Image 1 (tube, helix red, strand yellow):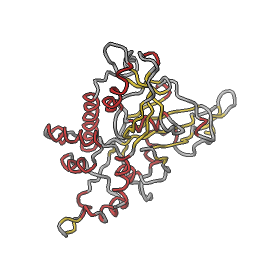
Image 2: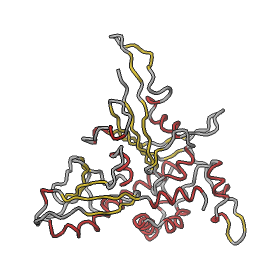
Image 3: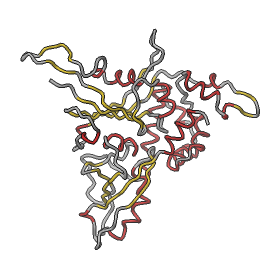
Length: 335
């Protein structure tokens, strides 16, 4: 199996063990039910787990209409963010199993947008796919022109983690890849580049893409730390900045390749250059401001080195809706 195929397979097979507790205020049985244990796909969404979890707790619930949502240590979880991204973002020190609380009442509409279960998750996926297509191709007609059955099959492949079914439908989206020597070598060595004993020049099938759909989640803490277990817990979503912005993939003269560092610093220019160094600009009181520092970057649960080629990251670690989700932990500028 080629290296790039192994990476994509890793993404699709990635899962997080969850231990889900029913909130104590909603327990109508005695004794309280033990927590449910579920393996959640990284590329999936929390509402897709409800069909597994609800039957487990149904005998312990009080009567009334269900309005299902999850929280982690009191913080409502945004259902439209992929589960793996939520885990990478909220657990600086990975917690396994990840202890979540499920609620069937009291939906926090001041924090979360409405969710109608699987239908909402599907709408979110398709809408994100259209946005990504527009960023990459300048329009989303390839997504809009897919038949209803193809859209259903594409969504089903994501729900079921069926990479083969998803791959068969990809040509209809015509999204393309970034051309780089790393992906090209992997493609040429792939069995999929040979059909009927005849080699196919896959380099001609690769589209040079200049704009990459990126969703960047930035958590800033005020104090430096040595160990991830020392990172304080998140209290509210106000502590996280969210950027939904494309990265311009530029080939600069004199540079071998555009790195992950280049991509992140293009979105967060305040963290570019000599990070964690004094800016040299004195304040009125004579103090100096220290630049912020990027402490941790996670994509698909992997803590990546910033000098890795960005093209490899995009071609191998992108989510099925063609967005690259990047979780970043930073130390904010200090005075």
